[in-house]
Length: 347
Image (cartoon, rainbow, N blue to C red; front, side):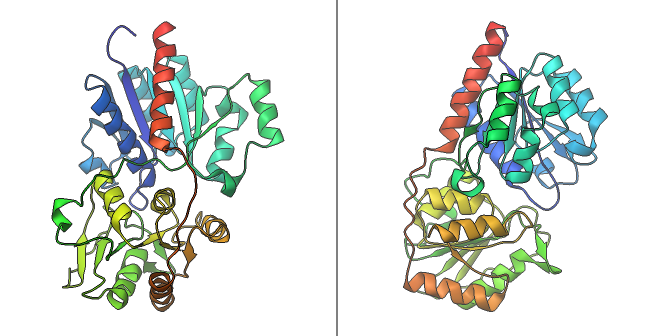
């Protein structure tokens, strides 16, 4: 690897969720800040809004990477990457093909179903690293069967990184600098595309925010890049479509209430020790929210405007203060990427 490495990011990308793309973007931006010469490229579904917003070079697919077997292999042939990161995405055959081309291959998983894919023998054989971004107390440590598979194929244990996010800044973003923390709430249902029982999660959250926000306790409401509607700001609610991750983490760190779905933002807010109300808005989230609530890390609410508003009022009256000791996930990921690139360089 005499030249600067080429890194290919292949996250799940769709018109609904955005978490995998955002995680890859956080990693890519941090790598680029440390190493401006790195050639970092994304492979994205052209129907996902992220494909038009990504600040890195993008290879477009007509569907998710998992359904675009030949197209992903063609991109691998074209780019000849030194490192490929499949974030909850892709097929085992694509991982093996990247390995055949000489790339170091990373698989990222965030819940049990995806984690199981990382331990499937036909994919595991190609992996140089498996990063698990879920809290260990939710999905458990490496099981005896998983350990057996690792020994069988002589593979390293997975790295439990926890949530991946940028370091909060020391002051609020300029577009909300009229707020005085910590007397504001922050609301985001996820990427903006989630629906449940035919209802938009973002719109349900917004109706609850209208009930909770006051002049003394205003709200910042983030619709998410995949939200297709328009929600108006009010004197008590500042509506934003999306914000860079560092700005989002800064808002989380300064809010006295964070209202989120059960995805990445919930985990990020837990690590930052915030007062959280969480609502499952996707099929993989109910068990996660329940586990976090059982640990006393979040206050759960149901997918109902009235219950969500009631739980937020309770959280403001009796705030939670999570104290989960967790190393910064982004730092762990960056360290492992540099380890793999060093190995590629010696190969």
